[in-house]
Image 1 (cartoon, rainbow, N blue to C red):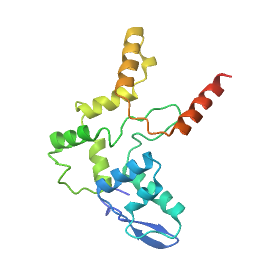
Image 2: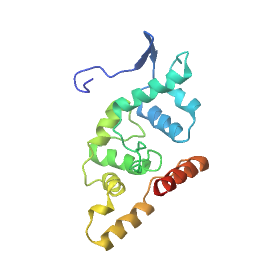
Image 3: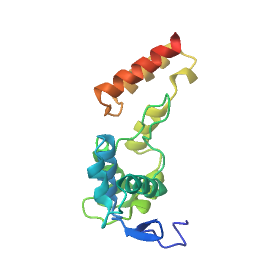
Image 4: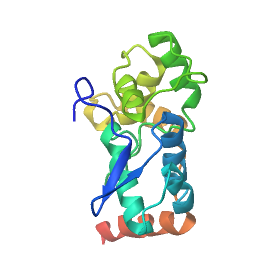
Length: 180
């Protein structure tokens, strides 16, 4: 699908039946907020009419959402997220206002357009600098003081940890298992 030449999607298809989805970026920001809280009911609010299989509905919604989104903040083994739509909302708002003149409180943007504009922000924006800091690998620095400073700043400006206590414990046990 090309953002420039094709109509932007407004539905998903299951077994040959089309199910309309909400396309406004706010709906998808809520979707990802619910996903971060492990709230499948909230995640289903992007549908105008639900498919019969809720499990398949969640899968298709996630697929639709990824169609526009870059992998910001997606959980990857050993990697921390670099963007949190809720925590970074003020910086996202400011970036769109200053870079594009778009007031996100008033704008109506398809999720795919929002993601394209987010990806296109110039690197001098505070949001992009913050994401770069979060993504930085301190091991790439030869100066031990600079490595320590990057780690310190990454702790201060890390995305909120939205895992449950059980998930944190499981991750800790997995990490310990790698040493023994």
